[in-house]
Amino acid sequence: MKRNLLFPMLSLLLVLTVAFSLTLGKYPIMLNDIGNFFLMKMFGAGSMDPERYSLLESLLLEIRMPRIIAAILIGASLAVAGTAFQAMFVNPLVSPSLLGVLAGASFGAAFGMVFSKNWIAVQILTFLFGFLAVLFSVGIARIHKGNTILLLVLGGVISSALFTSLLSVIKYIADPYNQLPAITQWLMGGLSLVDGKSLLAAGIPQTASIALVILFSGYLNALSMGDEEARSLGIPVEGIRLALIFLATLMSALTVVLAGMIGWVGLIIPHIARMLVGPDNKILVPASALIGAIYLIVVDDISRMIFTVEIPIGITTALIGIPFFVIILRKAKKGWN
Image 1 (cartoon, helix red, strand yellow):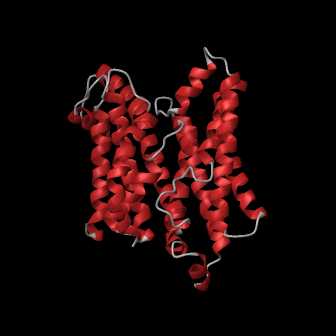
Image 2 (tube, helix red, strand yellow; image 1 turned 30 degrees about the vertical axis):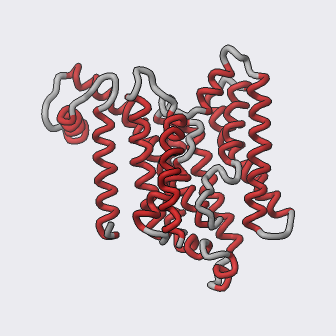
């Protein structure tokens, strides 16, 4: 695909996907009704029955649009974080969960559900423990001398194992009739609980983090060549890597705050983008963001509509991601050569 056409085409596809998703639901809405509603809402043009207008306002602005915006933010965040980690660690098999952020955030959410009835407290604990897990990984790597990348990976393995074990403890002591089902459902991921306040609180730092990673994408190109080559170019490797880890952790932790555990996006989307645009992170990172956003909207539509009851989106991403990754794995190596 020609690069000068890539981003306009992906942007158009994203807009079309959003428009189509707005029509889907237990109460289908025609595209012309959606167009008429937004014309009236934004410009006061046209006319519509007041009851119909009120119904569309509730369905579109209070239920479907927040969910779609959340899917865009989460898909883009996980895809960009995965792209950054794969470039930093020079490994096509790593994902945003590498340093334990998802395990830590999951423990934080479960801890909050058991010991607090305040949903805002649960979200704050989710975010804090996600960061704490990554700090633990980085701390292990800083204590020991040696290959920084290898030590970070090992630190991530230890951190993930620790917080996964702590999560098991929380699940064991949770009330099996109320708290445990809520924890289990949260860990499967879902966008049904997204609201405007959470979306605003998480969306601003997520968008800023995505923009900064795109800004730093030239450094990712250098880091993907290895530490010695990057240092020879005058790049402060440790500082840049820590800054990128911070940004990737921030956006990944906030995805868990919004929707629970959603896996595989940060692993497969960078491969798809890399096969389309090649390994240049200046193009790859924004392309991954757009493709990740489109992908998660589509997956959420499938989760909502394929059966009479909604399937947790984390299950759907796994069911789609596992066979898809097996298919693209043979071709994905081309982007690393």
